[in-house]
Length: 403
Image (cartoon, rainbow, N blue to C red):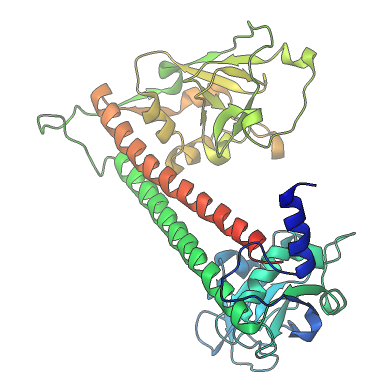
């Protein structure tokens, strides 16, 4: 047996975590969760108001979407003090898919909650509220709940559930340490949101020409032209391939991307791939959901379903300029006026794409605008990467600082 394996067995038997502050040596003890907390289920108050006109926040499951750790926002308020949940309780959904998504929050002030929520209030000095929050995150809520049919959780699942905990002082120190990482995650999340809002706002102003660029000599660029879609882009249906190219997933989040690069497990037969179209790097694709998220761009050569329309520039343009323009709210609203089909069968035909006039600045101005947006995207990508790394670091801490 390997030395590391022996060390791991000893660690588990002694009930101590992999990572630990050096001043603590006592073993962690196993306790029933019901011994450490009191449980309260939500009950909707008779009267509640929209806006901050009353004393106590009243929250519903959907309000948990607006927070990361602390429940600090709500849409409704009430004067009722009956069934108040004490501050620093752990709130989460009692039923439904939200349990599987681990929607757990700490309420920062006394509040009321609807009947789809429940709260665990720590017994004083038995368990630290933030330690309990991270403890449940580590265990994951669905492990405590009954998920055999519709996910649900109640007292009979919570009270007998066993967790390992250290003494109160170590709990507080562990919680404080992980909270620092949480604060960093919240800062990065806010920064990313602000950058995305800035990008969205400045895109609207540039494409509406409320903000205009100057050329290298400080002079105005020529007036923008407008061209119909079919003047700038042609409809490509190239099926000349040996089925040896990667199959592309057409997504609103990533654009056109090889399926193996994302979690996209849809199998296709060799025979059906024969009818697939060749996509060249730099092509645009009208997907079945373009009316929701705009036209997608491909940085990859590959194959896509014949259900998609492939667009290729007919003249010298800056593809990045149009990549950004095809994702603007204004252009998406224009696509929505050109729908064919009903319900989920709605799509944009090449004919209707051709009817929509597209902005056409001079090529030097296209280049300048594209470079500006690309630089903003780079900043968003940098913050996104930092955010993902912080989340991974936190996940690792949760695994190694708890037993």
